[in-house]
Length: 512
Image (cartoon, rainbow, N blue to C red):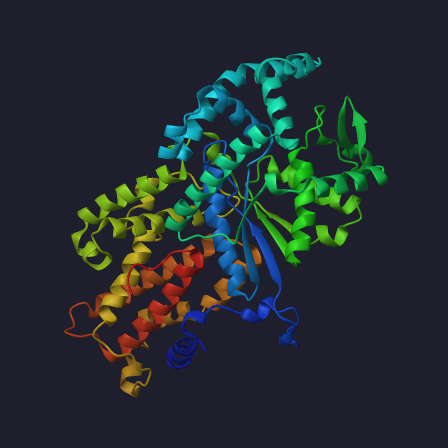
């Protein structure tokens, strides 16, 4: 297969027959390969999941782009995919926003720009709350009881507001509903700019109190939970051998994130009957959270359900510093669009292929952002570097778009037929052309490997190798009056593979 004379005769008809399905393998997602009539397996993928009371952090951005890519991977392998955005729309942060709204909220400013106004309100109330939070932490670190500090001031107001929410207080829930609906509307528009849509916008708020009570009953019946200082906890040392205490309800009687997450798993299992559920969430403290979540489900007698859950983590090391690109998702997207607009102005030849409108700059900016976020392995940091990611350097989104557009332009005036004479085939047996063909035939191996590892960096590296090898082949016919027939077939095959890879990453090709 890898002999220079044989490979084009195999690759060209194989890719032409499969077109956009080249690199896909729907049989992987079958429930039973020997019985296709049994249908496909289902996976729920939770990603993005920002906190609507706080700013859109870099880890949420990386989760959004990586989660969309992983969803595409599963879909390409025949799984039925449910894309789930589990919003942080409940709990103490939301209650803090509630008391902040009572002090600083403005209906006029909210309707003008909900995301930015809510962020401003949260920052202002949080600045007032931080000294109390630090005092509570110091008391705990000094071996004292922070209960006295937490029974006064903003601590007490926040806890009272959250209790009102959980008790169904009409005024508190009215504010929550207003914030929740506006946030989803705003995020839906912003995600669409990234070419991302969700099948379900869920959130902590939608976890049923009845299901939480069901979880608590199982924990108590199995002797897993106990009362401690007014809170309900699970002493993990007793049950797992690993130190740590998991709080189920705090001393005010309010549910915790862990309790809501346990209940959410049970509800999703009933709603979706999934074969697998994947959480695309940053490593940091969440690694401990998911270990506890999965382990507690096992202790509850739900080992089979726990075995279907997977935490796909990624490094968040570079994001502990203040983000350089603004507080909202809109800020990030606008900045990329502005920079790529300047990039197109500085490269008129390439702009003629890609377009010179604001819409073209926006699409190019999205390509730059997606490729940048996916170019690092999950364990590595994806440090913010807009100057490189918005250039035409090999391996960037703009460069992938440029080569795809260049292929489309070269093929416009040509009809593609894989029927080549011996002499025409012979022109493709030179080293550069053969090396490109050898790359193209590897694409299904690349996608299968990516599916197993859930890594994106190897796909970016592969597409970069394709474009660099393609440039060597292009150099040979750059001055030709028309593209030779053999190269038309070679370029069409390359275009198809490049397009398939870009779409897998979540990049919409600019050229048609």
